[in-house]
Length: 360
Image 1 (cartoon, helix red, strand yellow):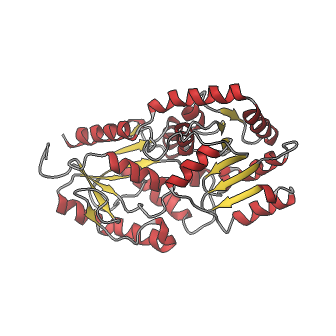
Image 2 (cartoon, rainbow, N blue to C red; image 1 turned 30 degrees about the vertical axis):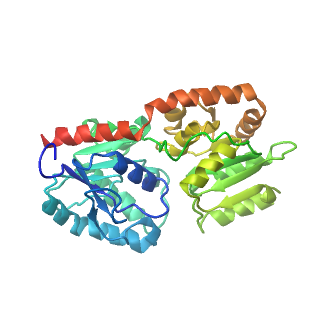
């Protein structure tokens, strides 16, 4: 081992699951790039990588609310023991969860503060209002996936700027790449059906297309609170037969969808980063992205940027990207250039440097 017989940090793999989305994808791909001699993975999937430390596999999001509660209890009670046994000095977490009641150095990654920006009356509200701010206040460093997220953490929670560091995300080059498939007449939306995803306006915009021979495909976890309403809106607008709802796809299937669709649509009212935008660029797929949150940072000139509250503007962008081949080529080429800024290898090296500085 290069620095000592102990790892510098333990990586919180409790969020890893069989069907990762969002934070789960970030956790999986970042962990895969970190040097196992510096960072040991707390691994619920048994043998994900050399030197990993087994932990229970019932803590992940796949296990629902019970899994969430078990994970919080495990974090408080078991993580301090694992740190002591391993000799690691830091708990590195890909989400804002860490032990609160011991003198433990934690470095956490925060993706956004959407639950505070758009609070919902759910059992998790107290978690977002109290636990997450406590974790962020006590962390020695907070890794933010964008400048927009760093600003929000600073101004909304009063976290000192000196603790906030921007760490760009990446994409899996082995799983997301151009396949040169025939483009088909559908637009793709990736992600959950939460209200901030602005899918009602996306449906209204899609219904405005004249002589519409396209389809709108929604790929992401369905939610009994929101999905039925979205389907009802589609039916009311007379576009239900042009909409397709797919709860989850594998990385291979997602790659094919991104290579087949006309464009990726991200109409969100806010995003802390917007990982699907990187995935689309990797597949040489045009993007229509909201002007809200961190999306303009990520896409820059590789997307048509729209006002997410204006269905007419969204509809115009859908038509423009499907008809203007010159525009499509420009967006694709700009996307190739943008990708150079976003690799998991670069992200991991930045994280490792921060850990070394904190343990010297």
